[in-house]
Image (tube, rainbow, N blue to C red; front, side, top):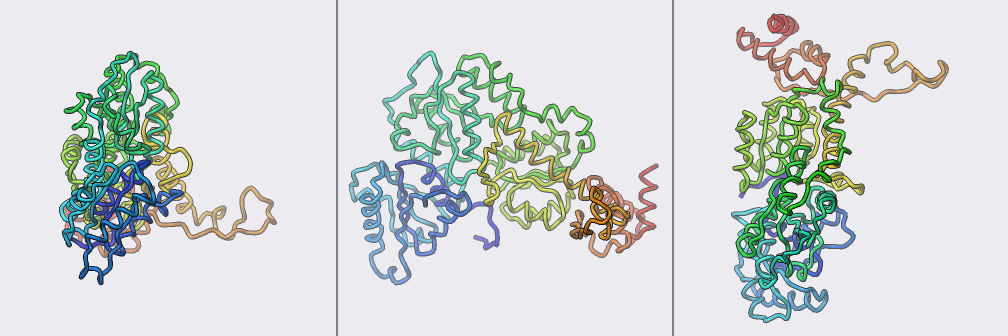
Length: 511
């Protein structure tokens, strides 16, 4: 185990909390010491839920370790059952409580409680949050699904939507978009799970004709069990981006035996139009570094490469269970895959790649800010600003609009900021000049000091004069100019890059 200021994933019991909190009528009894209740804040402060998670902690303290902590767990389970009256209970231990080996599953079974109990064995020191969510949802489905309920065989197809959880990146909004697509195709939704589902809903999960796996990190293991048990096929195309959304629609329509054209006819996305427009050309070929959970990272790489004309210069994920997908995508784009949960390693890779845009998690947002690079968030973990009150999906054609705005605006606004910086010494843009649209005698304004968009990544290699000259180059080609100049200096054996070296490199590459 490694201590870190930041972490991409919490322990697996946090993943279990994401599933329990997403559901209705489910309660999680967590054997945990005082202090492990910090996880409540993730939902109430970051996701801004109106109620605290449905979790009862035993919250034993150091002085309790000499007593019967098993009795503490059983008392907590009885209290939760009496107070909350859930349809079913999840029982498990946090990473700290796992060390005292009280066996919550066995303790709950011995109590013979009047509701179904789903025991969770989550190895906290071998696995992490995404796996914990996946395993929890799988165990819920396997325990609660009524195996006597089978697909109804009706002329109208019925689908399950699997994978969305609490604290998920835009899950609420994605579900709304996918529901709308299915409704347009004349497909009914049997249930969405875990988000919004109750144990009673899970019991009838076998009634659907097929499953839509929106988030493989959470839903795929349960979907594979449903394939084996109920012979339900699954759609695993994640509809993020125009191309993937069209593939998703065709795949769903083929399974349901319906015409895909009503859903494909949606022409509300502006991304295809913009990609063909003259305005897009100055962003074509921009280098983008992508890091996040595997599903969102792979989807982002496809959009960047195929739909926006960017060059993928880095691609990676933190959840090793899906590393194979990222490695395959990285090979397609000709980059080395970065599979790590160490944010310092990610920062080093971004600094080395010198991209024009970073797409990542809240960690990459902080990294990009330090390096002076534009950034857009595409994946959990995220902070409060990435749980907007407005509808802001990633999936479907409307999701493509959101992605278009989120990715392109940092580049466009970065260009505007660069122009303000470049013309700062012009008489019309100086601090002493009044606003150009106001009367000459209007009060003079004070401009904030502009933010430098390019970090000093070469250390003492660059002189101050050369750095100042480099900043006059537009940000979206500045990285290339820096790389070319450093390569030229290395080939020429020059120990320092001054103005003369910068101009010599420019002349060399101009030839």
